[in-house]
Image: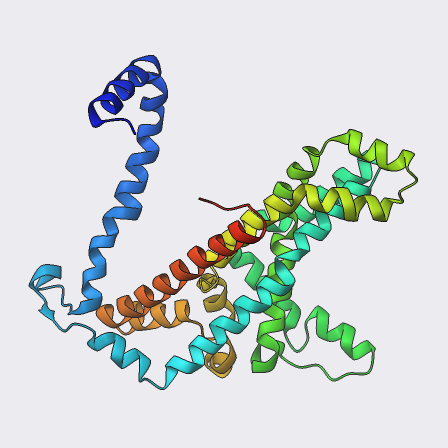
Length: 307
């Protein structure tokens, strides 16, 4: 093992040789220090009865009181259940969707058709979330486009976003529609990196397109899938609260209210800063545990991991 002096000398030599690269990375380091690590100091209010007049350090220390209040509250099981269900549905249906789209696009040989499909599927991602939610609201109204299609089939029209049991399907399907094209880019890039000689050898051996996909394409992108799955697990409980807030209402709270939307209401609407900080900190700790666990399992099973 190198001693500290040897490491210091090597670092100085490397810095002199690559000083411009080090200068280029300084803004990135500053960004993370200021906007990601700096705000961690504010997590102290989760253990205090925070008031703006006293400040973070001057507020009274209450320890784990806010966590206990949250765990014992009526809303704890409801928002935890909603968050887990929406996250798991997203993992089961939304995560594989861009993989399937990338595989299908990869099998298309007509370049113009492939580009048209890619462009059309990318477009919803670049539309403002407010506009997306407005479209969803208009389409699911009692007289909206989707209800009119159902009425043509003999069903009665209904305001779908007023039905608690329909909120999760609407949320998941709209997430797939909005993100499938954009998230497929990374898998398409991974497909481009597969050695084409493997396909040529498989064709010479008489392998069909389906077998080439199963035995060459999927194993070729499996490390990318593993990394993306680890990252998704690390954000499993971070359901996008902006879309939830724009779509839900008190009638659908029982199935739509999640941890992030609960934190928003308690912190910004009801001024329960310490309580909402405790809930948010609990959410972050669970996400960290899931991330580390998923990385460990992936490293043991597939030899692919973030660290």
